[in-house]
Length: 217
Image (tube, rainbow, N blue to C red):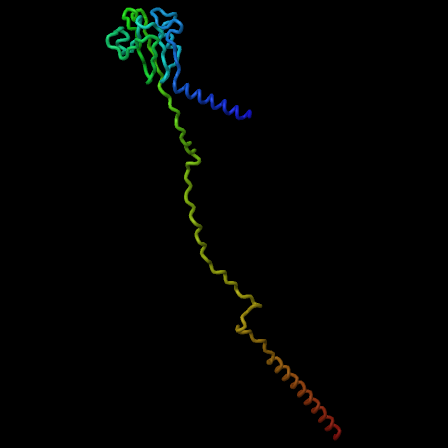
């Protein structure tokens, strides 16, 4: 219940502020003195202390038939010309609502009283629209465009290095070196052996013959 009451109060305040802002404020010209010849504060000094916006209202307090309020041009304001007013308020206790921004010039319907200072200049401020929120601009770091990444280039296939065959891994059809020949040495050995034996036999035979000869002698 407490939260609902709080929410309702907030909504009422928002609605009242919206209504007030749309309807504007009501300013009492001259305060308690009203629209008179000699106010306690100069009308233009009073206007300078206030800020007027579109939809605000001025309340001119005066008696019907004794005075009036005229909306005039700038030239007629300074000359107190009452013959060509833009708008005339003569019903007493008149209200005037600002429908635009810019200056407004008011004088009394009595030219003599206008020259005595019964006149007013009000400047209405321009309507301020809420600025539209624009998306933030990209920062210099995010504005830098990155170059498109190209796909990696294919690596060319290279033939594996040919290893030279080792001596132990020689191909089967390779010509094996011929073993060393020992025939010539064996032959020489055999011949030498036979020569020695033959020489020995010859010597033996010679000695035997010599002994036989000696025996017979």
